[in-house]
Image 1 (cartoon, one colour):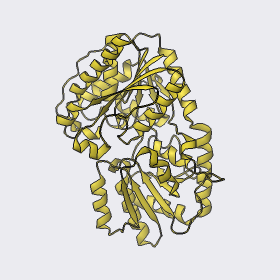
Image 2: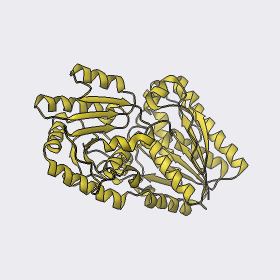
Image 3: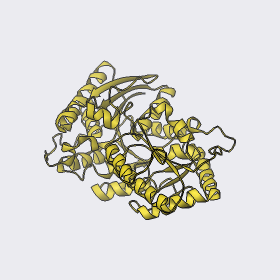
Image 4: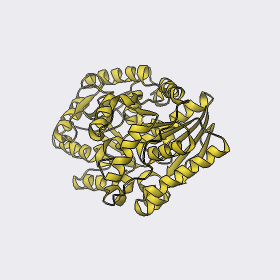
Length: 412
């Protein structure tokens, strides 16, 4: 099957989308499919600092094309970039026709694929992920209409979990029957500890807490720092690492300085090449993800695969894979005292830490393999391959200049 995969952002941008794309592309190429990835990327200094910018690197067995987000970089002009994506897909299709167009993210890439599918007569598949489902469409009339059209007219919609379906449908009025739930997945071998029980090796010193991902207040990183201040005030020992880049690196560092944390208490390690990420998990005991919402958290799955006890939140996309007291500890998003109490429990109770980590590791190995998830996605491709794309929607969107993402497009 000849497949076009359109990514919102791929490496060197560090995000769950990049990890998802990398693993899916590997599975598709390994199954013998002819795959082309077109990926947007930030090429400006700001985008590079916030995401990790530059053209996407080669992917074994996949044709890779990078499209710099010139419209987004200059003025939040997503429409300009959409037209570029549609043209690029059409040019590749003219050389050798595609059987399936698969977009990662509903807008702008899902809308671009919907337009290209209509133009080329090829069915479309759209993965709804992350903020795409949480807030895109609530920002302005332009994106509300685009998201509703994508959700109504793509040949297939993939989404990570039932809680995310509920949120998207409640916010945008979509039909839940339109969605196929395909959970996140992780390369369990890649993140394995290499210890007999799969858990972190014993070590001297404080329990090591680890945050990894986008350094973004929507991921709860500022709440984490406030919780650590409560831990220190009550005398609970810890050593914390915050790994990653994002829009709130400077506010996070400023908050840590305000609380007079030393580098030994909170270490900011910045951008992490994906090849080095498993070693970062292996240097930790507890993974902390105080997120407000996820599509399906890749970092939590990586932490489970690395045998780390996990502290997170009762949040969309988290509740589909973690259960409080069984394979994680969960508190309400934004509840800093509750987060501090959960961290205190996991730090001071080694038996609890081991029990939760063991349960998470066993479930991760059993349920969240990329081989199984890749097979599910390929089954969706096979189901819609001979379908016609939708044509009963308007190609022009209403223009709403008030959208907050036009002023801060990196947050979309």
